[in-house]
Image 1 (cartoon, rainbow, N blue to C red):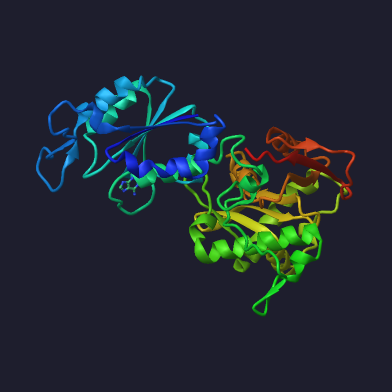
Image 2 (tube, rainbow, N blue to C red):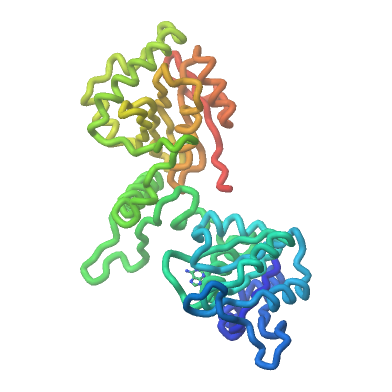
Length: 388
Ligand code: ADE
């Protein structure tokens, strides 16, 4: 990957050569070029800013030096120009993953009140242009943002990190949760002991403990990350609460009347389960629900199996009157995304006679596994997780 930086403070970007990217430069994985924007000025004072049209406080960065720099750097359609600005899209791990797929990033670091809008419009005609903000606060300039974005992007490049697994397990990776607490030796320090489970050698128990800790931490510190994703029409997918038990049971019964017809003779748990049973499994499973007009119309649940690597998905349920609108597919996608980082495969059961369900699951990438045990009247479907 080639990285260019346009700045009026080239020294600000010196840490690029000291930190992790420094090593990647030596190994040839990265090419770094820091450019002084003032080298593309033409006046004696090397002016890069001027007063804003329409009045107002502060100064605006002039267009000509940027235009000349883009020419000199031979920006091409496959390149991506990143304007660091507090009014850009918010930077996060998804944006980092996206930028890591580019072959060349050109950072244009804004200062003062920003860059003349025509520079951004012009950049869009030559290459991909992204306006990116580090967060909801104002820095003195875009250089620190360019450094932070660089570090987040570069460590995702294949071959950059020694241990690719650490990319999967860390905070903000695919599972969408903050990372669980970590411990190292000694086992007791300052009268504080490492949790027993981590020293148990039981990998399944460790994975479940870590997932639970990550969930708890995320709920406390960043509830917005647990906040549900939404259906295409904006209807949220929410985490179920104990008070949903009654409606969940009603939804199950409605859905499983259909299942009983499709799978004659197969035991259908909804008809045997009590409200207390539903409350009990609500405590053990990550359950997600969709409400329309205050009524619970869809649900799905997932939990990590004792092996610590299989994410068990169950009870994709959609009320009969709203079936065929993509709700089941959205719930299935949601519960897969909610799996902890340790999960390497998804598994689910459906009725052996439920052709429609099996079609839906196969379309979502699940494969029928006749070699694996299934309850009477049911089949098991499995999908490998791809940590894309
Ligand atoms: N320049 C000034 N503030 C910024 C921010 N929050 N993100 C990116 N660039 C900036």
